[in-house]
Image (cartoon, rainbow, N blue to C red; front, side):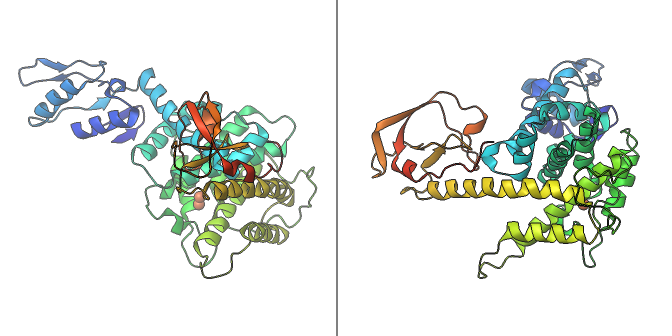
Length: 403
Ligand SMILES: [Fe+2]
Ligand SMILES: [Fe+2]
């Protein structure tokens, strides 16, 4: 599939079919131009939703001379893409994932669907996200994480007179920050901040997106996102200090710092030797980031905000880890589920396991709806209905704070 300008083009009929599956149904796919057979009879009218039968006729027609397979970018298709992107992101901002971006977004009460809609209104970003998702690019999760965490940190900076477009722009910049390497399976090898790995992808990403019809200051926000530059040594740790000339500079420093944070976390989790004693990754991340800030690589007021949230987040994450450990005590491995997430008050048996010694059948729990917060971090969903309470409920920890 080619996503370019106002057009989405398929090169083969099979791609049309696959694009229909991607969107959730062929009904979202209409061709921009009619397809005619050799005798000029119309096989498929322009602007009409495709169906299986039509697809079969197109497969037959494909055996003859080539024809145009441009897809109409109508409202129905745009809505389907928007729904897909929102679902993709909602998964990551669900508190039941116990992830840092989820924590940041909830703490600052950011309206993420609004940011998604605003981003998709831009044709270049619409095409870019469509292509990433359609091609199942593994970097997508990282781009979303950087975008969301950056929005959370910008919200935390609470600059007087900040506009909603500032949040939209940092979100867009976060999504595009690694545009040059999005097609790589092993994109993370390019994300190094040290050593001899080529990290010129940041400038290349900025050049790439500067060709697109996007707000003109976005390329500058990402240009040096993957390098340590000693340019903030003059800053102090005062949250009130105005160290930047405009919001774009602030956003650029935030994306740079968030990228460094994701780099450190990857490094600490992938380099860890299982035979070693478990390291304090949270402490190590905070130490490294604070150290680099004191060296002048990041603005000190930014690290203050980061530290504050990260320390509270650690407690939230540890709580999530403890909940997972309690679920893991299940005699039947995966039948126990803490409910609701993230603030769990019960453990129930999601598989109705009659023979379990932990089963407390006299205390059934009625699940009425399964919206959002019920999913565990393994994405298990509970259907509404009655469930037996599990004795592991007594082991549940007290939530560390209200979120
Ligand atoms: Fe990145
Ligand atoms: Fe990068």
